[in-house]
Amino acid sequence: MQEHTSLRRMFATLFGRPDEVMLELGASGELLVAKVRALLSLLTLALPLAAGLGAEDTTRTLLGLGVAVFVNLMAQIWLALARNHRRHHWLPYATGSYDVTVISGVLALLALHDPAASLNSVGTWCFYLFAIALTAMRNDGRLTLYVGSLAIVQYTLLVAAVMALAPAPLLSIDHGVVTAAAQGKRLVLLALMTLLTSALVYRMQRLIEMSGRDGLTGVPNRAWLLQRLPRMFEAARRDGRTVSLGLVDIDHFKRVYEEIGQLGGDRAIRHVAGHLREMLGEDEHLARIGGQEFVLVLLCPIGSAWERIDRYRRSLAERPFTSDRGNEPVGLTFSAGLAAFPQDGGSASALLGAADRRLQDAKRSGRNRVIARDT
Image (cartoon, rainbow, N blue to C red; front, side, top):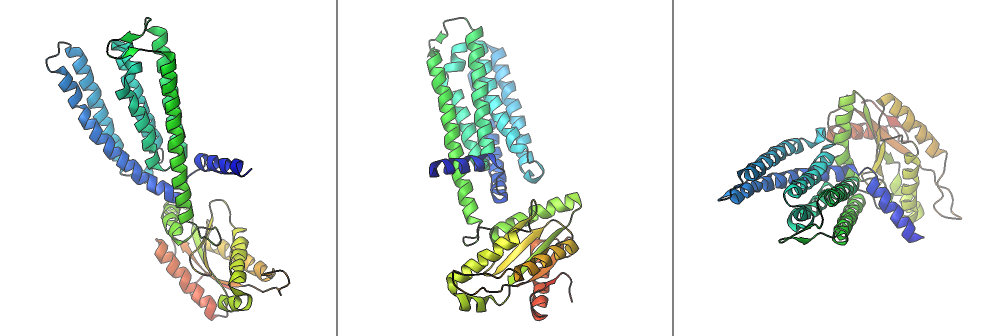
């Protein structure tokens, strides 16, 4: 049962949209892959020139040189796009498709000259494995599964076409005899490489998820929040929307800890976190940034955010927390300060500063209240 649950979680993670931190790291990985691609493409220019020295078949040399020039041109285009990754979320899929298709195209060109070489040549075929492995640097399980599947489909079609159209038997002095069993093994290797890379991506996603989560409550932590907010602000600016931040602090929590102990206090924090999570809508977030401090990220104007948070402030006070069986219920309240993007600032630090200033006003005014304006 536990193994089935783990497998379901693994597939849900791989097929689901990665965490924003993972996407940010994957964007830098895409840039690194683009630089490696550009360097390797430069080296391909030397191959047709070296092969053409003293060769009589100038047409083949010119064809190889044309392919090398095309590959270098595309490598520079991908590199330029990768430098501005925030605007091109489709880029990893485009470059992954390009890498696999170029390999298949080279093998198809080889088939025109020597069908056995196109299917039995190890050097060119191995680049399929490299293309799949490089998807791990993008930190997106969906991309790995896509590129691996694309490589399997394209190579299967190539094998079927060559075996159907080339005269039998398929053999050459340099590459031996082409057999269906050998080609089947290559397809199995592509599948195994896809699964292995997917497992690595899943492992990285889990590590990043754990590092970006609060261990006590399971909600995102400060590091995750500061990584996520700039993207939310960028989207809000693009769409003309408002993002409201609510800085929440549990009132008199030191006294609560003294009354019910550390274990009870931890349960109280989880109780408040669960209560606040109930108010979140789609693409809204709750993060724990301190001992008893939380940040609510709400996609609504500050007036609507005030109404929502204040309603949950009142409902929390009406739901006393019982730390353990047999103990007296403990009343919990919180104070909150609100700030809105872009009205109160254009950065995470500016908004958190404005929200903290209003939170302090709420505490000085007697606590158990929400303030959305400077007093």
